[in-house]
Length: 150
Ligand code: ASC
Image (cartoon, rainbow, N blue to C red; front, top):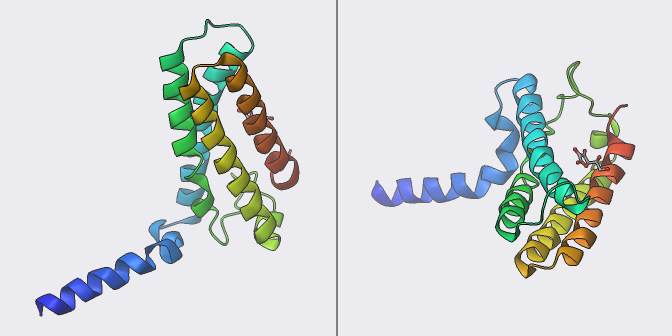
């Protein structure tokens, strides 16, 4: 009995990434989740942007914290683009589901660029942060151009 429940748990854990869509009761919940993650990510990215633009003084610890949050949040939205969640309150284009490989590449690219931003923030070099910030911004824009309704 005990062995069986451990096995069942292991199987359900293995299945977890593939059943991510089942974690949202309604398409609207998935939309709310991804919009929330993207919104908070934008807030922290914007805080680094203010430093990059020279509007705020450079503080290594703050930029590191913001970059860590951007890196973490960048991993969240994608599993919430569940089939059928291109609802009225969403700007998601149908291409997200029609060109899912391309969408996956675009989201992987963002995750990779946010990793570079985190590393740059840890380095303590503002110039390195500026370069990495640009890379993340380009990834945001590329995905918005192709996959977000205007
Ligand atoms: C931001 C933000 C975005 C991106 C994008 C980059 O600060 O909120 O959506 O940068 O504008 O092109």
